[in-house]
Amino acid sequence: MSSLPSERKALIFSAGGVRLALRLAQLREIRELAPGEGQVVRRGEPVPTAWVSTVLGLPAGTARFALVTEDTPQAALRVEALHGIVDLGDAEVFQLPAHTLVPPPSPFAGALVVNGLVALELAVSSLGFAPLAPAEDPSEAPGSLGPWPERELRFTRGPLTFGVPVSLVVAVRDAPALATVPLAPRSHRGLLYHGRAIHPVIDVGVFFGLAPSLIPPEVLLLDAGGAAIGVVADKVLGLDRGREDDGVMRPPWDTLFGGG
Image: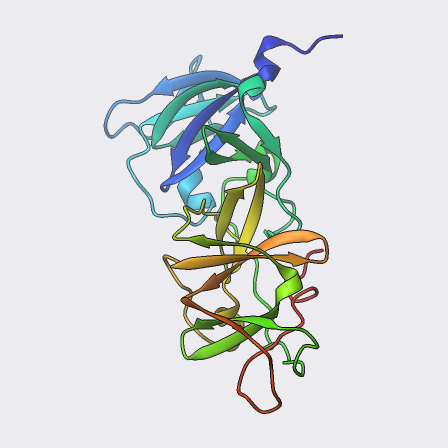
């Protein structure tokens, strides 16, 4: 049996500056609200309302629109901007990568990519109305291994220098656009769309006590246990061979990120 037209389309919108999506089959009504209008009322009854930016821990904006869901009981999701309806036949649909950690149950059902832009698909049943606590990074810094038996690509992150075996390096991207994932750990800087896939980008400097890099100058895509994962780099230094006591950090890249 073919799916209903509403199941093949999604609304793209934003809350707190993050692009989000919701299948039309989950929506009963889209309403634009007057300035200062707080409570959403439908057929004379108030509808429980969730400010999506607040729930996801994002900066709050003027939530002009209410997305009234088909759930029982219904909910009104307050959002800041609408970006149009897309046919899923014209989009790429993904599950979130395993290394993108968010608090369970995940408030995201997956991600859509339309014209190269990533939108996180909301899982309405997991969203709730109260602010959600973000996932946390490991409490201890990872260890550093000895020199690799092969040449390594070195990069800096803050005052630290890291070495990655050349065999793990998939690609290097300069100043890539990243899609923020709310509620992910501080080390998770976003999702990178590359090679018809989405990849989590991790700032390993956070594991060693550095503040997160807000705009990564470069991202190295690494093969970490069969999944390509981006690593934030301030500067790529080039190739070299490791030596004992050379001060280069060599964490276990294939097992470092968790969630796999």
